[in-house]
Image (cartoon, rainbow, N blue to C red; front, side, top):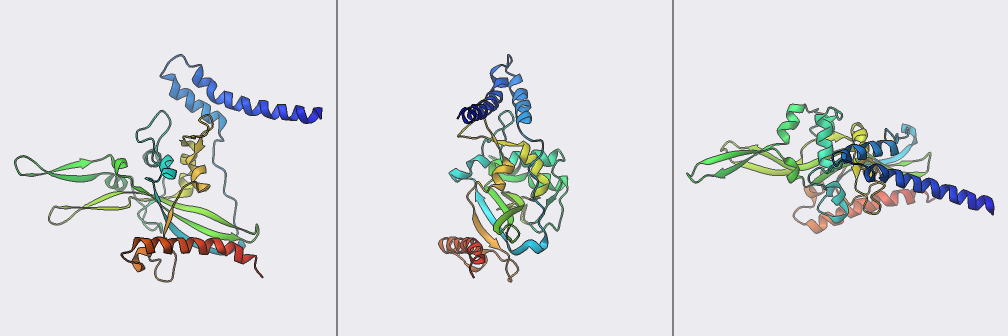
Amino acid sequence: MNMTKFFFIAVLTLFTSNIISAQVNILNVTKGEDLTKNANDNELSLENDKPLDYGYVNKRDILWSKVVWEFIDISQKINLPYFFPIQPINNRRSLFDNLIKGIKAGEIKDIYDDSYFTTKLTNEEIEDKLSYVRTSIGADGKKYYDTITNASIDNKGYMIKGMWYFDKRHGELKYRLLAIGPIGKDVKRKQDDSTESIDKPLFWVFYPSARQVLHNSKVFNSMNSAQSISYDHMLNARRFNSVIVREENIYGNRAIEDYVRGNSLFQLLEANKIKEDIRNREMDMWNY
């Protein structure tokens, strides 16, 4: 009984000390400008210096797999942690800002024009995608063009590409995130000098190459501000709400909207049907 009580007290003391250490630097600073530096040093001391490595999966262990494309709408309440803060607050940034910061710093290098990783983008090409031209008519009746460079204000959400697969070695259905693409305005100039605004992925990031950056990027934890969560953990744990918009198929991986036209309700029902088919796959593996 005494040993059980001693073990409980030791665990409670260790847990409490971790929480206190998460706050001690912030509570004891004497200058306001030291707040950011102490917060960064504190998080580095509490977290591992790299994300949890993916386990090696042998091709022979994959009994079944399916690649799907999903849309994450950041206007939904459950997805708001990926959108806020709009402006950086100390070391807290939105997912979009963290991706852009990592790309400009050269920490994220595998950026592509499509989700099939065929055309790699240069830094100059990415800069062109992050700015667009807005037209306006002046008081003199002439047309003026303004270059808008803050593309984060037009970030509508994210497209993600991942693979569901059944691991026969572990006997369970698993998910591996392969790519992520922020959706924004891609304005192209027509021959008549007018502009066309299309919501589409600005670029595609090969997700494994961005894991270190997203691991160092912390998300506000509304349940406990002393223990922050990384974007890498959030995405790998699928802590978001998404809708399937495409699956790999015999028709050239056509999107749902290509064969279910003009009816958003039927498109959503088709997406749910694909999701249920994936979920039922694991149960079917255990039926004899």
